[in-house]
Length: 442
Image (cartoon, rainbow, N blue to C red):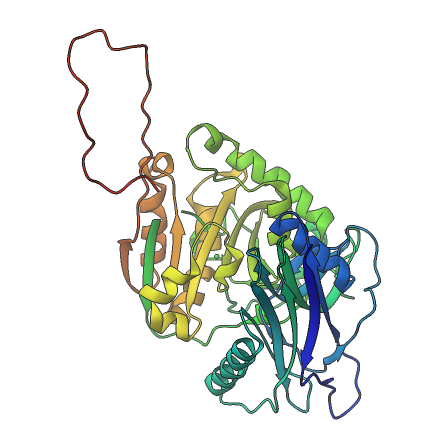
């Protein structure tokens, strides 16, 4: 068997000085065991009272007016609901090893603040990491968010894997309702409402193997994805695209029902890639819906003159939302951009099969490029060889290079090999005694 326990270190409830309507964030802990790391994690979720939710992990920004409270009761909701949360987890699977996980936070008198999540092998190590991270993050913002509070959990492995979990629950949403009082509208509603919204520059994201570093003057970017709020904004349509696109909106959250409609459009647009590329370039429906719900991923939607959605691109500054890349690579190779939060990832670009052409793509990419340029940022994407051969890589590069002083480069390449056997050797040639001393496949 294994033993597990939870521990708290200087926990404190954080409440704004003036009572006001706002978000109540509840911090809860759980430590679990299982025959696998995954089942140990599930057991820890059960102990924390959140096992039956679909988790959407947030970056660690606390909106103004929030209250942070430590609780030990199960979170209310229905089986399968969506839970927006910040979480830290740690694992141990060798007898005698200890796993420690912790969340730390600080907030000013308005309730605005920061969370950090860390894990390690000792209470002291995790606590020190939390203190250091919050100090650095506060200094980066030039703002004193007040004293640090933290909650930690630990688990000791005896003979089965264990997981220690600390989770901050922001908000629960059902699959039928949007997670805020102002839900993201259906496609036609967005198009109609955008007519009453003045055009304004907006922040940005899509595709797959080059990096683009942009420099040039522009207005400061908007960073609404730091707050879990459903927003829909209109951005200017480039003059060259106005015959095909009536308007472009930027959505931080798309309600699940509308997201499923978009997924059908996504499948229509990308189904051919399944037989052209070795790597999987199509998101599963669950992955697609998670991106649509995640406010860290900005959805740029192009609307035709008939009010229908004809294209979508996605852009994010939070590289943890892109499961197939390594954020550590960016931190190592682009330390300056990473330090100031100016690394972007262009996730995918789709255009309705009946509306395909450069105009729709141009309408969506231009506001994204202006966002990255305003941040003097770097935007990366990846692309399979089949699409590169069809000229998509050059198309994206030309579109992005049109909006500023830009340097483009290939930053990585993956080559797949295949050896097909047709039977035993039929000649007398001897097999090689040894293979070349080369690094193995990865």
